[in-house]
Image (cartoon, rainbow, N blue to C red; front, side, top):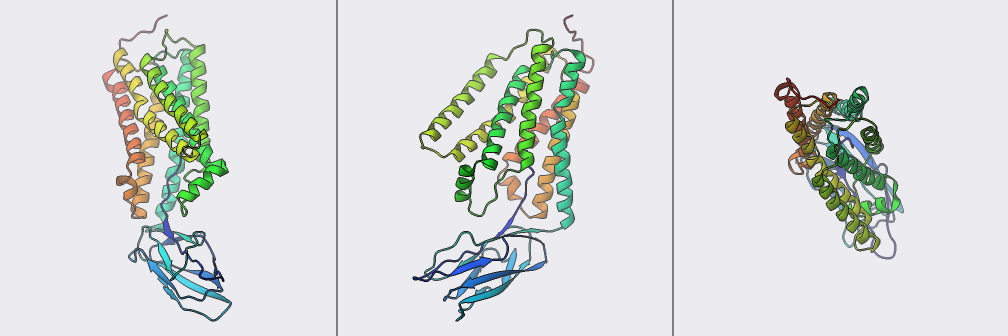
Length: 361
């Protein structure tokens, strides 16, 4: 899983005119500020014969001084820009130079928050839910080992989980390690950051391994004749056809491999939405949660709640509520998972607390 950040982008783009192309270098590409802070940024300008005007997209978020750089009859000029954060959020500052093309590699990313300590709290919360989600696989593994049985654990849930985390791993590894895909991503998002961290890869791969261990237990221990249902096989076959067609289109150069990774992520999101349904229905049919680890649910619930809390803290600290309400996918998935966790807790402690279910000897 990946921990979410919100950036204030300060992009200063320059270009050239005529036979002599001006060269502009900026002293840093990344800057972290708190509302009210000021920071100096240096521009080294060579062979630039035109006045440069800096246009602020949102002057209620960031100011820059000077915003006009006059013509200098010098081969090389060093200009100090004072960047002041007047509000949390994200904005862009453009360089307007007549008859010049922008240089996309000259930019400054600035992160502006309201309260610095909230950043620390957000980081701590991120690591706690990362650990909670990573450890959440093991109560079920231990329960299976202790009972020497997987009766009560739904095989459809396991199969969908394995496919979902496999696709999630493909997405993370592709974006993090494959240069061709990273180049394509940077071409589409020139000032964006690769949205995958190393811990995202670790979590996804670890989830696959833990799920495979659980699946191996299903072959070793008593399972009372349970198999993957025809419905789940149909759903997985449908997803398989989508992935296969997408791969063929990539190999035929119809779409890019980055698009293939996005398709993998969309399938994974869909699986996350439906994977809990078979287990919940199985508990209902058996009128029992015996064999389904409640420890797994508590850890998943903890991770989901803290994940949403982190998103809310970051949205407040960076005035970026659009990240939640404008693109509700991640928040919605976390909320949906927490709702299922609450439903499982109700099944375990209220609905089927006094169960009459008995396992076959």
